[in-house]
Image (cartoon, rainbow over all chains, first blue to last red; front, side):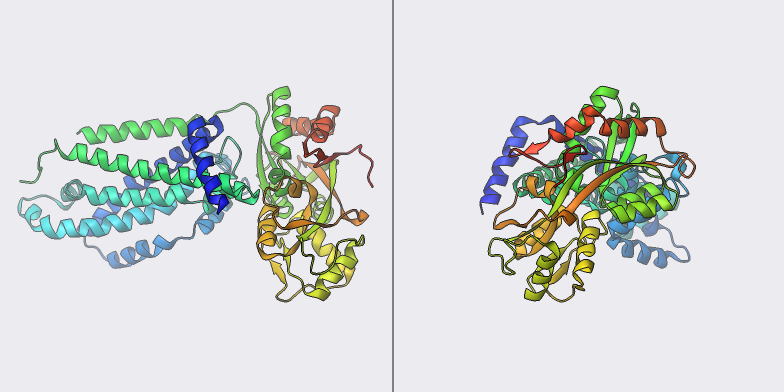
Length: 238
Length: 271
C-alpha cells in the first residue's frame, strides 16, 4: 500500500508547489471540458426541453436515439472525428487535428446526448406540472420552452454537470484527436495515462486525486451559483 | 437577466483561451512510445526549440500508427524504428529521405525467478524457444510497433508460432507491456531506453541482452513533398538536420539514467 501513501504525499506536494506544468495541464483540462459541456448545454438543453414540450412524428424515435447515445464509446467518437479532421479527410483543410479545438469538438459530441437525455427527463416533469397552466395563459409552446427551462433550471444544471463529468474524465477520444502533446493538448487524463505507462503510479494516482478535487470544486461552484441566482429571481410564472 | 450575462462572459472567456493557440512555427513529429516513455524527446527537443524557435508537437504512437498518421498527412516528419514498415512507407511514396540518427538495443526482461532459465543465455532465438518450451508467460505488445515487429521477427527466426495461454497479446504501448509483465511475472521484449527509465521494476530484471540481432535503429523520415504537399518541409528539414548534427547527437548521448546512455548517437560503435 506504499503506492497509495506515496500518491497522497505526491498529490499534496503537487498542489503545494503549484508546478507550472501541472497548472497548464489543469487549465487545459478545465478549458476543454468546460467549453465542451457549456456548448453541449447550449445545444442540448433546448433539445431536451423541446422533446418534452413538442409533439411531432418520430419524436419517440429521437428520444430512443438520444438515450441510446448515452453509451457512445469515446474511442469510436475519437476515431470518427480523427478521420474527418485528418488532412486527408473531408474537414482536413481546417487544420484542427491535434489541437484543443478538436478535443472540445470530441467532448461536445460525447456530452451532448447526456445533456439532452437528462434534461428531457427533467423537463418532462416540469411540463406535466406547468404545461396546462402555460397553455391556458396563452403561451406558445416555444415561449413555454424557455419558461420550463427556467423553472427546471436545477435539473438543467444537473444535466450539464453530468455532461461535464463525462468530459473531464474522458480520455479515449481526446487521446486520438488531441495527440497528448506536452504543453499543448496534454490534459489531466492523458497525463495520467502517460505516467501510468511510465510506471510512475504514485504520480499518476496523485494527478487523479487532483482531478477529482477539481471535479468536486466545479460542481460545488455550479450549485453555489445556482443558489445565488435562485434567491433574487422572483417566480416568473403567475 | 444576470445569469445570462454571466454565462455569456464565461463562454467568451473560454473561446478566447482556446483561440489563443496562434503560435510560432510548429511542426508535428509522429514518433514512438519508446522515445516518449523513455523521456528522450522531452530531454532533447527543448534544446532544438531554444536554438531555432521551432516548436515540435510530438504525437507518440507505435511505429505502425505513427507511419499511418504521417501517411494520412497529419504529421510533418516521423521518427520511428521498424525497418520493414519503414521500407513499405518509402515504397508507397510517402517518405523522401530517411536518416538513421540513433540506436539502442532490445532486451528480454522477465521475473527474478526466471522460470524458463534464460539468465546466462546469449542467443535470443534459443531464449525464445526456451520460453515457448516452458510455456512461461510472455507479454506481447501486439500493436504493430517497432518493438512488436522485432518480437515477431524473432519468433519467426526461432521457428515458433507463439500461441496458447502463456502468450499474452495486450495490444498496448511499451509501458503498458512492462506493467502487465511485472504484474503477471511474465517475460517481454523491451527497448533498453524504456526499461531504464521505467519506474516500477520490482521483481523484474534483464534476463538476456547483447545478441547482435537485438540492435534497434531509429530513423527520422522526411515526407515526400509530391505526396504530402501540406507538410512543413523547411522546419521539418531543420529538425532532421539538427538530430543528425553534432549538437543533436551530443544531446542524445547526454541523456542518461543511472550513468547509462538510453540511446546511442549514430557514431557510437555498435557491439
